[in-house]
Amino acid sequence: MTNYVPSTDQLVVEVFVRDIERTRKFYTELGFTVHSEKEGFLEVTWEGHKLYFDEQPDQVEIPDRPQANVRVMVPDVDRYWARCQQIGARVIKPIADREYSLRDFTVADPAGFGVRFGTRI
Image 1 (cartoon, helix red, strand yellow):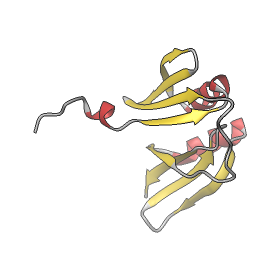
Image 2: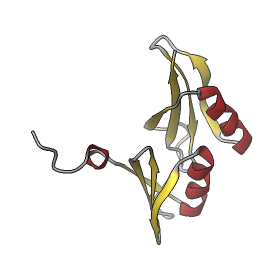
Image 3: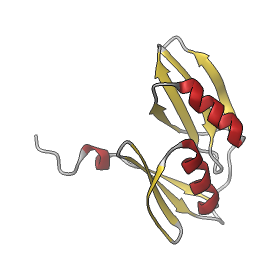
């Protein structure tokens, strides 16, 4: 079967956020690359995979715990743990070796969406 679009464009998560500037700062500090930005909309990438943010300042409530997260696989998760500590990211699940063969952790972005970094054990 031929792909209709490239696989990195097929499933893209769009997150509604209150503050697009704060969101951009958070994700670029984590190592994401800004791919495009226009008023109220931000597209960041990680190794070609896209994540969209749509600013909705009057409609977004920040949850106590994320209802979803995006997992980013990295070769050295402890380095990203240190980076998240440096920027003061809100920890949802601290770093640990898990029974599912990953060492990982989850933090919340400024809108309360989860970002989970992991490394295979």
